[in-house]
Amino acid sequence: MEKNYLKTKIGIIGGGQLGQMMLLEAKKLGFYVTVLDPSEDCPAHSLCDEHIVAAFDDREAFKLLADKSDVITYEFEHIDAKALEKLEEEGYKVYPTAKSLEIIQDKYTQKYIMQKEDISVPDFMKIDKMKDMEEAGEKYGYPYMLKARTGGYDGKGNAVVHSKEDIDDAWMQLGGGSIGLMAEKMIDFKMETSILACRSLNGDVVTYPVGDNEHIDSILHKTLVPAHIPVKATLKAMDFARKIMEIFDGIGMFCIEMFVTKDDDILINEVAPRPHNSGHYTIEGCITSQFENHIRAVTGLPLGNTRLIRPTVMVNILGEEGHSGPAVVKGLYETMKLKGACVHIYGKAESKPKRKMGHITVTADTLSEAEHIADRAYKFLKVTSEEV
Image (cartoon, one colour):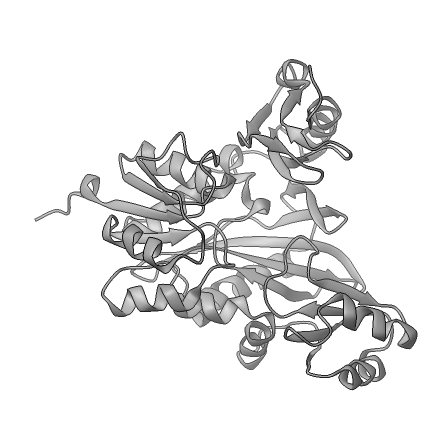
């Protein structure tokens, strides 16, 4: 007898913009969705069927979500993997699995496993004490990167060690020994790229076109697709992505962030077990978006076509500097007059400096045309807290 997918109930941990965009695709397919998020007015609130208002470390709330769901997924990785593991032991389905989440949460363990499986990564070492930082300087030279092994994002949890004299400050900046640390050799890269991969319950894997990522203050500013990298590097990136999905037994969307070196080699930077900011371009740019394929994967449906329809550029819209308070969107009319520009406003009630408030996607016949329109749109569209 054919499975009635309409009876499948999905639980999503996190109701931010990624959860919101997962939800939009889930509702297109008629799924019943419950969201767990501590914010009563989170972006996903107005779309979900039920909203459990609870903290992300509330294990009783996790159990309640599980009881209301046939499958649980999540929009970010900084959650209690042990709590998810306990749910799995009790027979609940969690994708990506708690095991893959727990490994990936620790950047040192993540890289160690990839290195063992012949995936190219920057040179790295564990930092247990301040003296280890001197050893890292001797091994990698200065500057090198000091990273928190867990919890970092958008540049948070990182410190550049410029010289031996910086060691004390960097050590204290990242907790003074209170959290696990690692050091990485600084890479003189040509560009930062990412590739999205999705793996289904039956082991099928699809990959998306490689994106060229531009960052400002360690926060993604712009993604351009297709990336300007040689075919050989593209093929290696796609091969690594498929291997990584197998290594971590990934189910659903994963994002693999990479460096392209000066000699066009690929080094894997980090892996995120979820849809990713750099994959927002897929909503308008690809036949099947990263969010639709994530929902397809975790519910057992076949994966969709990931082909790029046209060259695409995505630009993040962050809260304006110096403005905190009720969000006000400016320049929407002018932005939407631009040919090919699609605006996504996440519906966050409060704007804060550098908070992700929305994004713009532009598709065009050429990448240069799409980038030109995206840059114009970015000048128009602002999210502040000022009165209109």
